[in-house]
Length: 202
Image (tube, rainbow, N blue to C red; front, side, top):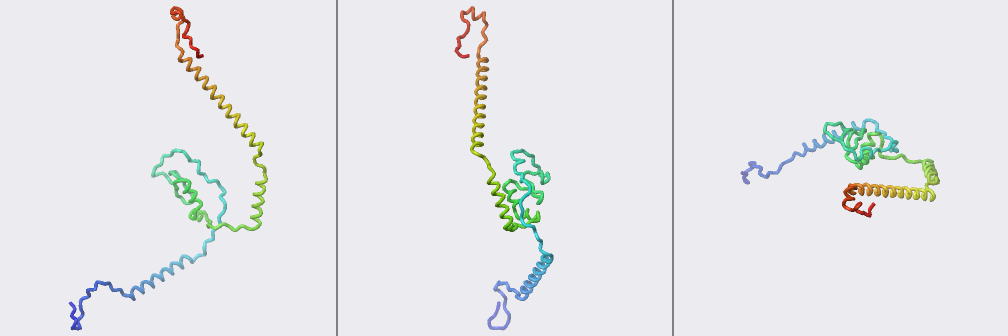
């Protein structure tokens, strides 16, 4: 125990950790120097120039495997596993919504060598686009005559289907009546005194 009267050193019972400020200050300086050196080595090369975004020149196939059954094994290659396979990123995405998100996302576009920025359009490009859209709008689509013809054709097809259904029903009734009609021996019927059961159905 420490004695207050003497100049002797006592026991340190404060239980508080004492930090050497100089040591930790030196560690911080060393760490900052390493980080600066790492950042310089990363940015030593010229920055990568990526192409701007452009339209897809292919159709995204989402419906070819729709409704089909497939046996999935864990040892199968990625391209044959369940889901949508991206050959650029070599990954499998489980559903179509996530697949679309993936192919429109940053990681996939970078793998294709494109940035997420689109190219700024010039005045001439905008005017050309307006001209194309105006021509597309001016081309006659469906007229009322075309619409009426289509409706008439649909009605005729519907009537034909109804007629065929009625004929099939009549044929089934005839077959059923022929099956239900009992076989009567004419000699027995004559001996009993009647020619048939007098059914009004035909």
